[in-house]
Amino acid sequence: AQSVTQLDSQVPVFEEAPVELRCNYSSSVSVYLFWYVQYPNQGLQLLLKYLSGSTLVKGINGFEAEFNKSQTSFHLRKPSVHISDTAEYFCAVSDNQGGKLIFGQGTELSVKP
Amino acid sequence: SAVISQKPSRDICQRGTSLTIQCQVDSQVTMMFWYRQQPGQSLTLIATANQGSEATYESGFVIDKFPISRPNLTFSTLTVSNMSPEDSSIYLCSVRGGADNEQFFGPGTRLTVL
Image 1 (cartoon, helix red, strand yellow):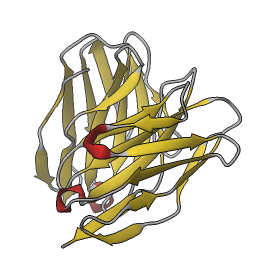
Image 2: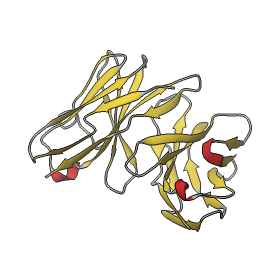
Image 3: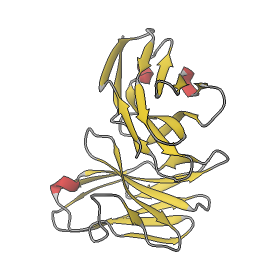
């Protein structure tokens, strides 16, 4: 069985500061890894994904994530955040064969001026 | 990418009634998924709906409570039956598609049960 743990439920940061949102996963098979963002009162939007190849993945809005197989992690980073990055961020995993996503608990990123 | 629409976008319902949520996709997809997001919580998969077969429900969800239809490759419905306040959630439809088989989400249906 697969599982995802997001280690921080809330991350407050000041504008233009760097941020890292942590995600660890557990799986007995190869995985696809995803980060989604949910802005207030909106649906989920894909930020980035890791399928294979380069372990450093770049996504939209200046976000990037690094797949670390030995540490079973897929942390999300941004070097300088904006107020508009305030949202809920979800890490998710799926296996190569099936179609369903397993989500982490979510991390609320709050960017303050 | 896939464009997904859901109806209704939100509703307020009385305890004991049922609500059917519609999900429409702009392209044909094999796998459709229904998720629930309870207030302040993450997404939980309710069931997987493939066209031409019975939906597959996750642990804790049953067909009598959440019947699903999948009449064709672009449409699905989820019914929330005999509702109680605990069913107040956002219900999201999702599909897999595209070259990378990624998952796309609809805007969600925000349900409040009084």
